[in-house]
Amino acid sequence: MQAWLSHRISVYRSLMIGMVTIVVGIALCATLINPDTPFWLVYIAWGIGGIGMGMTFNTVVSAAMNFTPEGKEGATSTANGIAGSLSIGLAAGLGGAIANHVQFFGGSLSDALGIIWLMAGVACLACFYIVVRRFSI
Image (cartoon, rainbow, N blue to C red; front, side, top):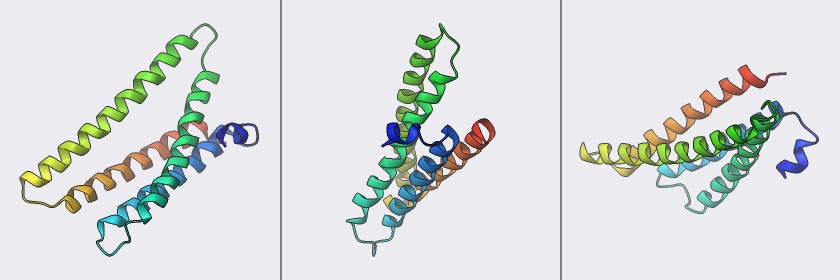
């Protein structure tokens, strides 16, 4: 889908659509903290978030390569790979540390997930800021 869209919309628009889709997925996942929310909603939420992540990740990699000076493509590709791996490890580690910290002080898993989802939302806002500053029309 992203490859098809990349010929029809700008990098800025693709990133914004992808990030808005991720935020919608995060918001839907965050509603699962409420025990009255049906569990099947997680499948829809992760599906929506996954579509946004696929659009955004592929657009970022393509944009980085497009803005790379000739002869430096290998360094950019390596930096993209390292940044992707590092961010996954950092997010998983922070999420685990938050859950452990909240449990240590007597909080529940719902409390920990609330903090984690809030941090994910803040990270998305930071990404919106970066995209608007870097790629705005």
